[in-house]
Length: 397
Image 1: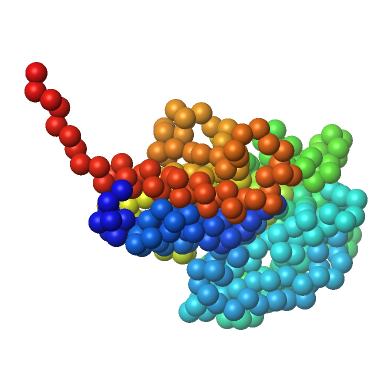
Image 2: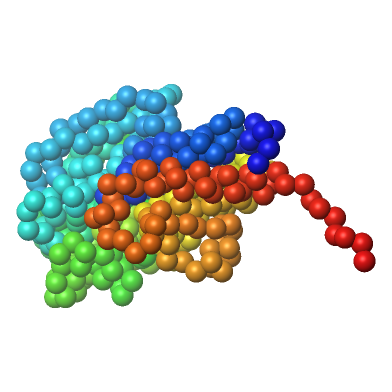
């Protein structure tokens, strides 16, 4: 690679986290170190990414450099906890990450409670965000411990779910089996004044064989009989929402995310569902960074078929293809499970694993950052050298 090529190169580093190992910001720093090793004079832009689930709040805090705020609330089984949230630099957008209050890791120290876990705590965080005077609330969905159709969030915002006798039903998916009416008279006064955006990374409907209960509740501890019960409860809840608001959410694409949270927020608050990676990319200004990029390095823990269906790598590749520079996108991952042909079909030039060969995960994790740096240096050197190489005309016959 020539000095001139390195000096004019602009490398954009836009990875997701390596779950269980490094945050997206830590991944970006490790990759950037490798780029500097290979091209000391290159311009490097680091933008930590996320797909709208866990880690999105951190990615936005890194990009916005705003102060993290906290609110006392409850976790998915009702225990006191503290959850973080943030606002954009201009104070217009508030960010709530569901996993902060209602995430599965928060309650991993107790036996799972698939019928009773709820999202009330996230609703209380959202109320604090509304109190801050924002004009828009971005709710990042992912890592949910519950299957409550978003009823808990409404409750945290002041709504009351009542049974046939006018009594409040218990929090959680089990309560939805008895809900007969929805009292919104005490709903937070600003809840319907702001714009609600939901960051999702799945397209599952609320109910049915591909719905929230059938697909995701087993991950939260639901046994087969409980899965069927929760699906029936969500169906009842969807029917009530349609009667109360006129909005049908049963088959709404993405309504099955995070235990069905979008159902309640779409019906009652008019929330819009958006692909999480694209939403995060917009918020951190990724498109502008790609306009003159020479190379884009993204990454995630496992690069597989889901990665090219709305996850970070897919979002980055789509934006790169639409940018004026059309830079090549390379994925650096803990493991690569997607065949090269499918990788290229997704607009990704290549995908490489940090694993040096057959290795146990426990042995690889402590050296993730180091191996990312080494791999980033190799890929950067190779790509920039190839782009700098002069074209050699074919020899005359």
